[in-house]
Image (tube, rainbow, N blue to C red; front, side, top):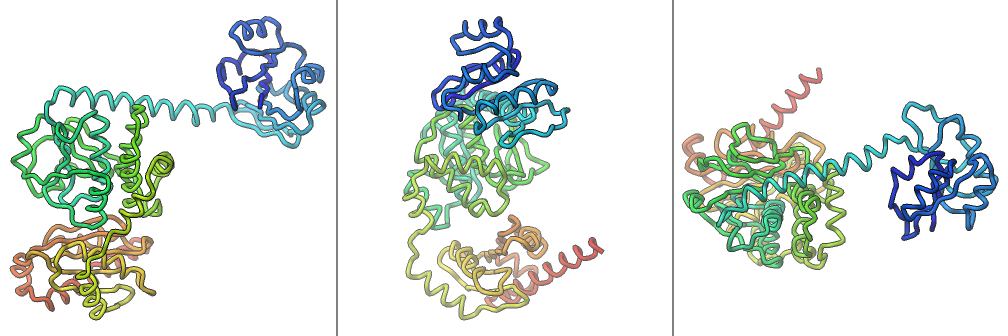
Length: 467
């Protein structure tokens, strides 16, 4: 479909030079023959004449339904639109106007667009892409001389961290030999292990001292201060969690407003025009889905745009297999034990699973418990390898799970998380030293009492602030 650009001078030609719609070049209608000649010399089509006269539009239109863009002074606009409508009463018309102009009464079917919108919708995004491209180039230049690069994740990396690490390695043009992906811990959740298996992502477990063997160290979805180990300055941190004031990095990109670190890396890849493979797209899409709960938790416009760009590239059969990993038989016995001993108190469902074979059963059961009618919070605890693990979930519109868990268990061990999910890990030796006993019953009772006290305290504080 050809579209028609109406403007007394060459403003629209300067603005839209070379633009085509559906492969059809536009036709420029201008007032002066000299302007028409300049446009024609550039290989584009133009007519000149009196823009207030229907005759020029009879020459221009083929069907009478071509789309029209008009940019003209306010004092001439009414006459131009009248002449246009005389020839093509049904054609769609877009009028560009200055921000300062008050929109006059226009004929039906005419849409107006402030010229400033071009800055917001075209110029600003391109400037942001240019800034990202420059940042990518600085990162590449910094890492280029290194023979070996280490890409670090948190102790029990989630899909967002795994996908971000894979994306950073791709951005740097590295392979698993020259830029291994590593963690101080292990991958415990079945979905995450399945993700690594299906997408062939190898994650190494290393010790803190081994970091000295690498020429450059990058961290994704985590910051140095989040580790129990004392770490020196690293080369790069890319993360979406709140910034640790003590973070030490030569370069950092920390965006707490974003729902996922995978979104940041997707922006990097797109700005640098790196081809995103099906494998990488699947990983990044799953990273965004898992960290934003399908864009329902903390998803921003940037997350949605990254999600949309990845959706068509990803392998959705792989995604389904990752999101529904096989459940071992022993998990059913653990869940039956937890269901039989559940307690519901003021919208909080508590369950202590006792000793469990692997830690991931605890958050899995917490997810399941949140689906129970009348439950706003699920708090599930269990013991693995001499540590009490406590997983907390909520429906998303109540108090922050991370705040409540820190208040409840922060004095005993590692505790924190997001608004809708959080966890605490406490060594039984520390629990025993602080509280005197660490039997299954005392842990169960202690988790309930501490959580309810912390939840009530935060609710009271919020009520006092409102008052």
